[in-house]
Image (cartoon, rainbow over all chains, first blue to last red):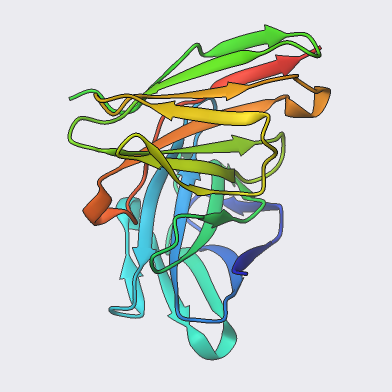
Length: 113
Length: 113
């Protein structure tokens, strides 16, 4: 079955610094991969998705992620962190024609002034 | 355009009771998925409803059941509540033809005492 592992439950960066949130997946077939963000007391919002098109995926709010099949990774990056980026980030995987989306445990991003 | 709406926002029940949570999908969506998010964890897929039928189910016991109405809204029912059922319950809607893009509600926080 497909799964994702997020490395680091908590990441702290300074405002303006690079954001790197790590996600590795496990899947027997090419997967669909997603990054979601969750702000306090809110539902999840889709940041970006990979569905077997371009391996470098650009999302909202300046985030992007690169699908690397050889490393089974889908890390999320942003060149310059803003205070408003502080939130919980979830990586998720789903197989084509399967509605069971598997989420990682999440990474809490803190941005220091 | 209203997004995904869930009610109630908070609920307190005691062990053994039954609970019903409600979800109205985003306008234009016909598919509803339910997720359970325990504290400090990522969401876990409970089941998905389409055309008023359960299309797929995750690894949850039969105490968890659901329903979808002709207007696409949905209910999640949990019988014989256990302490471990305490969690944030998220509803996500999508369009059957664009199933990879889920829109989440803010959730119902269920506390079982």
